[in-house]
Image 1 (tube, helix red, strand yellow):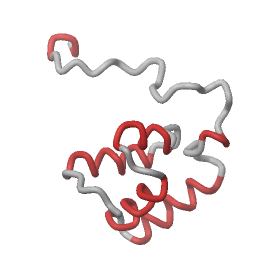
Image 2: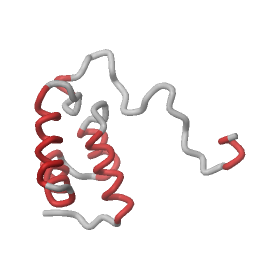
Image 3: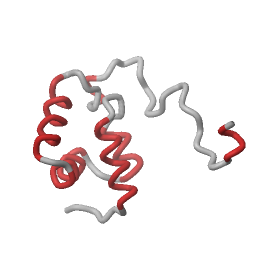
Length: 93
């Protein structure tokens, strides 16, 4: 069963799914959707060729979408040099 997400949430899920280093567990933590639900979102929102390209990449071993295939030294969802989101325009200068 698909959950109803607004356009921004759907776009963010797709963006996170395309990122090689973002595991499905991070998407589940943030949006509450399982891997199979992410696959279904990708299937319905992307062109068929884009979906096939994404699935091939996820299953090829290049992607680290599955924590079991991931380097055990990586134990976080967030990149170490990523800034915290503060919505404070002064901090972006």
